[in-house]
Image 1: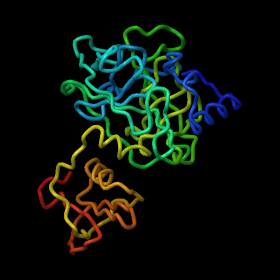
Image 2 (image 1 turned 135 degrees about the vertical axis):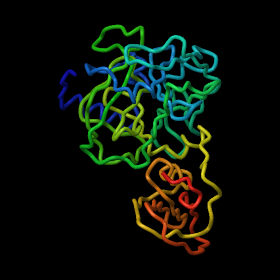
Image 3 (image 1 turned 60 degrees about the vertical axis):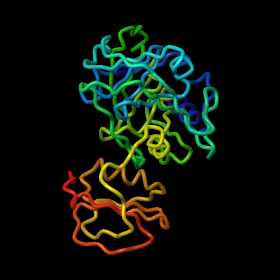
Image 4 (image 1 turned 45 degrees about the horizontal axis):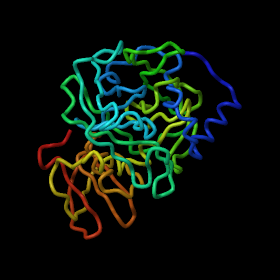
Length: 312
């Protein structure tokens, strides 16, 4: 990995991420890719998707992947619709091809306009594929809470590593850390530039969860900030039964602010959660490690995985 600690450049790119860069600054426009780095780890390889035109994407469900909006100008259902999956970091698997049948954009966004209807930056699109990814692939869990500044992160991309053309889509990973204190604007920055041409749309992971989609050398669209819409676009459905208007009691695993019932469900599914309580009044999600009782409440939606024999 090449060390690039240039204060002026870092400040400039951080501002671009927060304020929403002009499309000329995006990585696909210059075909950005990972700077230095090593072969991507196996868990990241299983999640990676390679569009035809220089960009990267990440599998989030068997038939859905996320990439950057600006990548979809040349990778969509009519232009370069073929994507490939991976079994090896050395390059994508030519036989593991899928076809983009639809590109989902968050309301307010489009190619050339990456501000959503809420005024937040969202250079993030969802690719819907014709068939499910093969068994060798594994959808990435997505982060529902933005990490704290300084949290270690891993960027993954299939771009032109160190300026060398990457025609086979070799996947590399490089370490960095979170710079931004918040993702309230819909985007955030990392401490050092890690992307080169072709990495646009690629993944930034914290604790193996997808937290960002690559926009520029150190700028990312926040996955937690847009998670409810991502889940909607990828047709996420809670698989453990109909929620009830009850409050479950037990040992608390975690509690966090959350305005989306769907995100609370997703968080429960992707942790060692036995049950959850979600309050639309306080916009709070509570994940429980154990369930010891319950009582009826018209103000809380809840579901217990343990009593259905489905707890993890």
